[in-house]
Length: 156
Image (cartoon, rainbow, N blue to C red; front, side, top):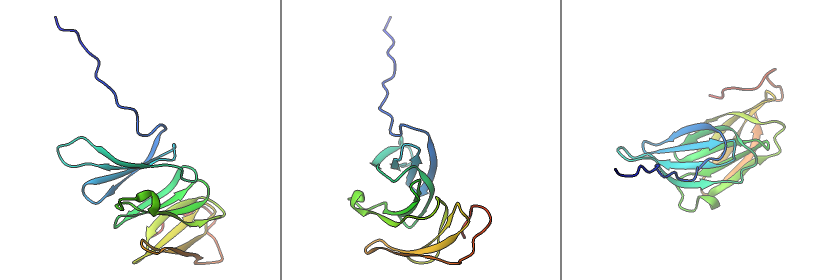
């Protein structure tokens, strides 16, 4: 009889556990993991998922992620907030640090109007940052000098 062959395996895209998956429009998915990679997948109907690109070297693992109109706002483990234009052909050049040196990790994110994102922190504080995909980020502005007694888990 015919010899049985094991199916071939591709090298893994993520090398550590995946923490998040977000839809980007109707035909893409963004995955993030403990390995500090952000991967954009094409998920066209009837085809297996295909990696479009993989971006690494974020400042720690992803602690919060939201996507709005092809702009991803990403809270990273080094207490920074980063913004990425997901559909730009040169995505590596279109990922910028919106704010670095936050006192604690970003725990929640939400679009708060055209070009503005709200953020919540593990320490209980919250604020907004202006983001423009062509001009980069504006300054992060705390909204209140007082904090919640626990992490901000949702920003609306």
